[in-house]
Image (tube, rainbow, N blue to C red):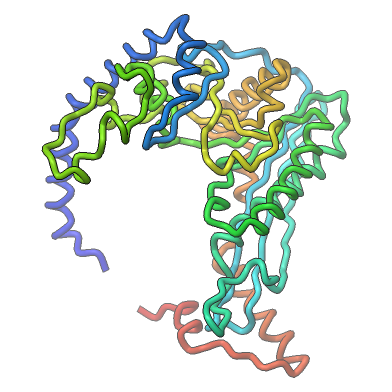
Length: 397
């Protein structure tokens, strides 16, 4: 139980600290805006500098002028929006059997004179194969949350690709995914698991590509700093931006910290910068992510992104390179993401509905376990639910 009397004073102190930091935030934002303006007409030079940099942070790569601002394209009068989301139930050693249930919510909204929406969910119950298990010496402990998360994403892309393939090719469409298109979790995976995952991902995205249906990952309130880090590289006074060589970590050297020349914007995010730069409906330039895992992606599937002012917030929209390379698909993604956010009061309505379809509520979870226990008992299988699992399902206090 939370002791509200104690936390109240801590909230007061926390708020005072936030107020005291406001001038520093404002200084950082002004500095970032200045650096962004100073990149005008320097794209080629800056792109080369970024390419040769060796920094300790993730630096956005340039596709367009960093200071570019693009107004909203018109929304096609007739179009279709696909969206997916998912949730899961995962059993462990305290439950009746080791298995998992994925529930993929799928939305198809046709915007036309006879507008219609198709809202469905696709439940998938399965035993974990060996690739999903966390293995420890001489025992299998449980399903790996990281690998199951990747499996969920692949199921969403597979379902979206099926919808895209059934779409009338004459009607413009977009497929929206909640979250990043970069499978960051693969960084620490085995080469074989990484290869199998990316092979499946490529197959699904090639289906989108062949149908000319752009796939976009929509990230609400992003915390990334890729563009700010590129602006740091732009003001580096050294011939090459190599942090370890020119600005080594003061902690490692046991010396007093001296801020490097590129410092000053560490307190803010790209989202906060573009909230000042963009007007409602506008997008930023398209950048490319330098995430290490993207080295394993095929060239057309490497991930770019732009920031979009929806009128309510700044969102990060991630797209494969084949979308960024096609002006028509890029403009369509811009226009329909913006239109969906407007229709959803700040968040794409199709993604919000997909979330509702995917959600597994408490009573549904209880029914799932009840049906599993009944069916296993019917076939004479042992039901091994522990008292701990039962206690978590039925709180008494």
